[in-house]
Length: 92
Image 1 (cartoon, rainbow, N blue to C red):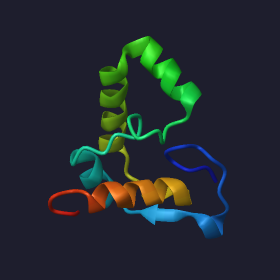
Image 2 (image 1 turned 90 degrees about the vertical axis):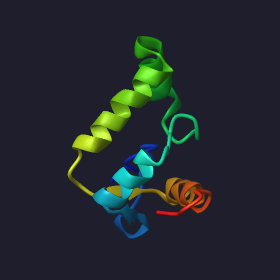
Image 3 (image 1 turned 180 degrees about the horizontal axis):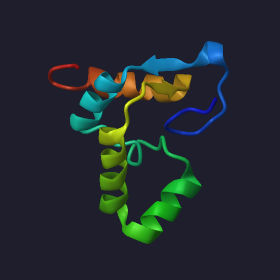
Image 4 (image 1 turned 45 degrees about the vertical axis):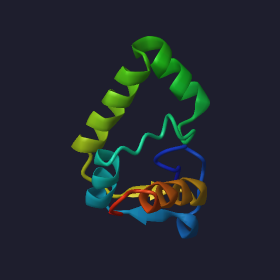
């Protein structure tokens, strides 16, 4: 499988699962994978070139809001999400 954020290939034993509800809450709290460097460069450049940074982020947030499955993250993305959550005034 691939990481749901950065798209790196990860084995089943290395997947860090984040529940759909928890991930939506984290995104609602301001998690931005573009600004944090967690989205693939080519995908980011392509989306931003077509839509602009804010529109790309808005489209991604809408996709998260519609998603119904848990998120499978690689170790680096899971650590980044954990770092973001730990820095919130009231962690999720």
